[in-house]
Length: 486
Image 1 (cartoon, helix red, strand yellow):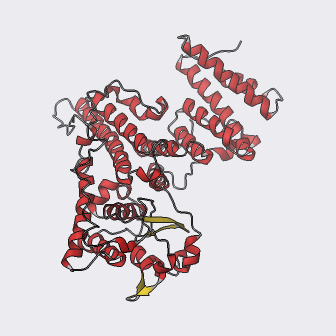
Image 2 (tube, helix red, strand yellow):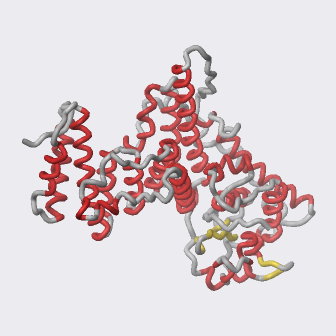
Image 3 (cartoon, one colour):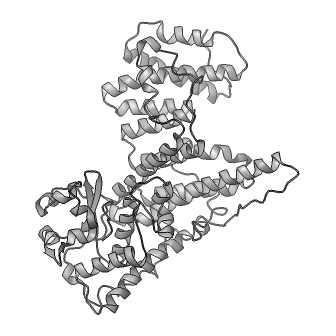
């Protein structure tokens, strides 16, 4: 059996698998229900609609004004983020969240962003080579759901999951067997990993293997995405699959009030092994040591947790690709020299700024923005998000994110970030100073202003907060350029 040791979720309650009879399993028809996202019009009624997230969260849109189709790209990105936010809203119950819909909205937003970049490159090439004709592949669609993802719309990919579930039902009928739990799970495994040929690559390198539509299209996906597909298919069979993190893996199993049943060995393997494949037999995996007693002690992850795990994987993969030319570059690398009192200013300027791939970096930032919607009080995540913005040279946004982070972070971590944020203030001021054509000793003035006073940490925080408020008021009055203290 192929390994599914990856993902986790909570669907509808499942208390007794003996309720699965040949007829009662499949009678309910959900296709007639009206989809709550099927009528979203991008160029129509949502054109003037404001989103609930910060304007900074839409920083990927800032460069789109010169696009040949600016409104289309901008509205698709906004609509995808809005629909994602609505799907994972904390006002709705966790069990009502659709993993498939949320992750397809993630795919739509990222695909729209990459399509914009490709179109922008094509237009730039056409301008450079005026004597040649460069064909544009850009297309416009009247709604987010009409946008193709690997050749299918969001609705069609949801139907694809329905089709897989129907194939499982057909497999059970062809065997002339009932709906016993073990038989249902074996049929799911047969359809997914033999008939459909889904596989998990030994090393996850390609980010496409972490997007739901790509995995459904190619059959090759990360452990977390394969498990999400497993969960979604079983949900359509009215079978709840739950799971939890175990070491470096995520294991899934059918929800049951009797965990001992999961570990009973029949036909040479346990039900737990049927679902999780070879992982439970691998001595290198902590799953091999699990028993019914230890399983009951694991924390069951929620649907929001699963989405968070998928987004965290995207952040890691896109950052790895973004920093490929700087082997070993870590998000926290700029913080190390700043903490050295002997090198207060020589290590936080643009003279030797590490180069990163802008598209991959922006995709990592977008995934981080979504994860922050799920975990707004996670100070470590906000710190990482701020550092990615630093590599993108969005200094004003970095200052704001890291300042928020310091409010939640432990005192020791806040002490590390404090001098870095102070220097970013100076770097931002100097950038504004130079943008106005000034030359001279702005850096020396900034140094003396920030460090000549023997102020304690708390006082320095108050000073910089006050300076930020002054600058904000200054700009709100229509002034341009830096606020200067004489």
